[in-house]
Length: 387
Image 1 (cartoon, rainbow, N blue to C red):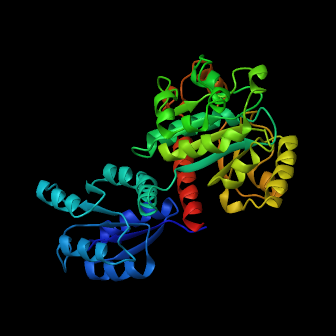
Image 2: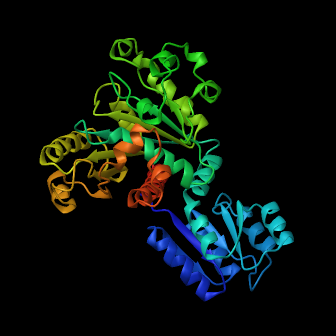
Image 3: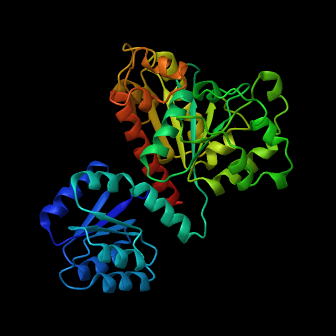
């Protein structure tokens, strides 16, 4: 997996050190230079994912710095972010006109916002350089029911939309025979759903079609393609249309989250095999962990690399059970995130159709959801870059 790297160009050593620590804490590879010329040379050799620079360069003007970057084939498509020591409207205009994707004025809170926006900026750069590259596909699945997969999918989708600035998110409920996301977000309509869409002519299934029809429930920031409203309707699903549905959504959204629950079949397996990230949710009970090992062994046989897997240990069943190291040893897979036990709060939020981060903004779980959104986005982007 190709790690996302960030080049910092700033003559102020204290600023470089402070920001580099922030980036390293998010697992970015950080490159440092103190002047523009060294920055251009290092960018040409290392091809970083993003360049952050102070416009007050000691050895060259910002226009010259940006001109040389854009005229070099190896660096022309690297997004550049200006991080200025002072607020200067003329400088900001010059940076943006010269091709910078963002302009920030240094402060502690601004730097947090800027670091949080890195996945979005890198993804936009990838899509632009690839001539409109498709959005990222993130699949959620589990080996056993009752692990909270759908709740995690909905709340992480919400967190991606909220915490990765200006990102568009679509969520596809592919849980069969009956969808599980609609009851969580409070959607009770049954005319527009996955089955109904699959019965449309292929020419109808376009990005604009989903822009016009996808559901956006109050308080949830993603667009939803609901699943089958009942088991009887699920029998009418045209599985041959699923690839067209996912592809059209990718054209329209930065992130397409697909909840397949524990449905591992000829419908879901091709999506898993092509996904940029596969989120595997497991509980702390031994039976779920054992089943997850079987699931992971099978996925690995199908060519799914561990670099594309993001395992979450969800403590929804209670505080008792296996620890993270014990679960990792059994499954043979690194667990990237532990979702803390929320007692009855998770159920309460679901019953009221409210996102966790809205209902309980100071709860530890809300902070973990933000962490999950940023980690998943970074890993999915790295996975796409390494293809």
